Every structure is written in C-alpha cells, then in structure tokens.
Image 1 (cartoon, helix red, strand yellow):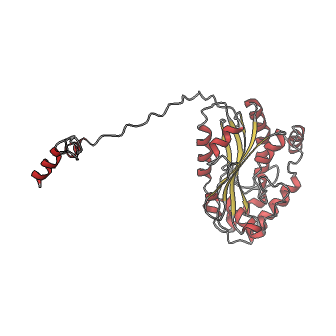
Image 2: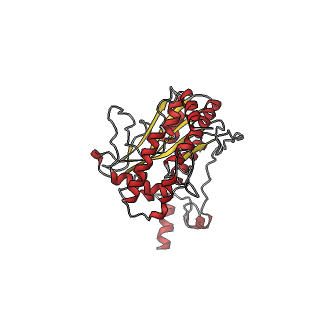
Image 3: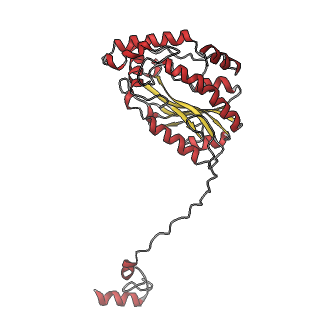
Length: 309
C-alpha cells in the first residue's frame, strides 16, 4: 500500500496529528547531523542517509531510523486500535515513572527496558484476568531545566479491560495518587491513570518513539521544553544499539497485535507457613527437665534452688 493511502487511512481513523513525510525527513536529517558531530563511527550510521519513506537503505533496520519507525507506525497504529476495540472498554491511559529508572546525562545507555517491561507484566499478571490488553512504549525524555539534568524513563501505555482502582492498586505503592518520596529530597515515583475519551489519537500518541520534551502528568499548562543538541545526540546514539520494536509494550497480544487465547489463571490462596518448633531445645525449656512447672515463689522451688547451688 502506498504511503499516501496509508496516511489517508490513518486520518480516517481519527488521528489528525500523525507525522508527515516532510517532518520525518527533517527528523532524519537532524539525526544524521547529530551523529556526524558525535564520536560514533560513521560506518554505524552512514547507510541511514540512503533511507527514505518508501525504501530501506540498510541491510538491517535499527530503532534509530526515523523512516523505518514511520513505516512501522503506519502498520502498528491501525492494528493496535483494532486490538483495543476488540478487547473492549474501559480504556485507561497509564504513565508509570520510577525514580530508580532515571538516568544521569551521559548514562542513557544504562536504562533497563527489560526491567521496566517485567514490572509492567508482573503487575498486570497479578489481576488474573486474561482479557486485559495493553499497548504502549518505553519512553525517555530529558529532565526539565528546573529539575536539573538527566533522563526521565517511563512506560506510557493504554490498558483495556481493567478498572481504574485495580490499576492504581497494582501500579502504586501508596494509594495517594501513586506518589511516594524515595528520599527526603529528590525525584519521586509518579503514576498517572486517566480514562481515554478519543481512542485513536491516544493510540498514536503512546506509540510515538521520537524524542520529545517531558510533559508533566497533571500540569498540562506547562509546555515541554525542546531537547537540546547534546540530549538529542545521546538519544540517537542510544537508539543505534536497539532493535526495531524493542521499546514497544505489548500485553495480551502477539507481535502482530492479535489477541492471545489465554486461559484464566486460578487464584491460589496463600496458606501461612507454620513456624517450626525447636524440638532440640525442649530439655532446656520451661516445663521440661530442670525447668519443671513450679511456682518460683513457692517453698519447693527455693529448696530445689538451694540444693543446686
């Protein structure tokens, strides 16, 4: 299918802010400029200059290529939207931010995508509901200038088939809107859960994988700050080491966004473990051996004590 027809199909779904080919070309040009100015060897990215919206110029695509991501998004957004609609409401936008996921400037390559995915999967598994579906992305964004320097890592996804109170329970460590202070001062763990009204635009938003300024979860009136050249350069170098689709969050579906036929899981009640009795200490316990059940204030106890002394 041609690019124009695919973009027209995306527009008919209700997505009005989908990126254009011109915008992708500018982003690819910025990618190449930042990589040329970085210490990365040219052989790692020189083939990206031959890529376009209709063809791939590399032997193996990478997550850093904006054209490759653009072509994949043209397929992913309709497929993910169809998956969520098939799963059924309620639909909730979920943003999970952990203070331990933050990375200092220059150490973005130490961000663990696998650990974040495992946390998300285990939390959703704890609901024991095979009908729950989730689609999203592991996103990174520069820390706002008012908070210093570094990277904010978060999971941005849409969860279908789960109640809001259940999502708050499994993703937050406290019930007060999911906020806890990890130290007396410093970054905090944030959790935002909001019901989705327009599903198609939100699906396109959670599947975006370009670099953007960090948007505060609740204070939407604060505009995000555009990433600086040094931040974009580090972000592009990080993407060169990632496989295509490595940052995608998929739960309850396969790689093609088809529902999985999972069987309901039985909830096993937790049986408290019996505390073992130290039977080898019985001769020394009160009521056994020399510690017979004798009133320590009685005359008999005083006679026994005098004999032993």
